[in-house]
Length: 73
Image (cartoon, rainbow, N blue to C red; front, top):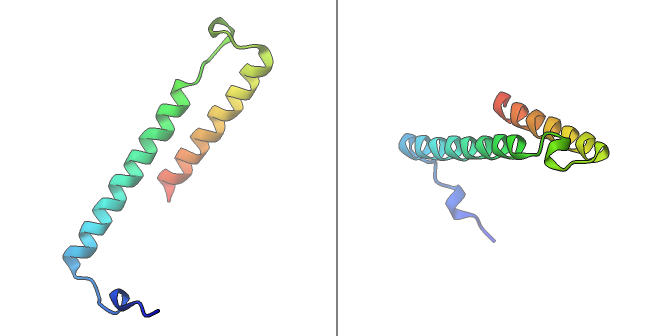
């Protein structure tokens, strides 16, 4: 199955448009990661057991690490 659409070199304008779309997607993902991280419960006063609080802290750290990794790339 030939890929004829790959035979055409995109114009500078098309490349710029694609880059802008990619940047918008990355920004939306970053906002999602940060929202998820800061939406997690933070303490026993919110009904978390000590074991749950430990798990939530790990989740928050993992989510923030992913967000930072995405920001740096």
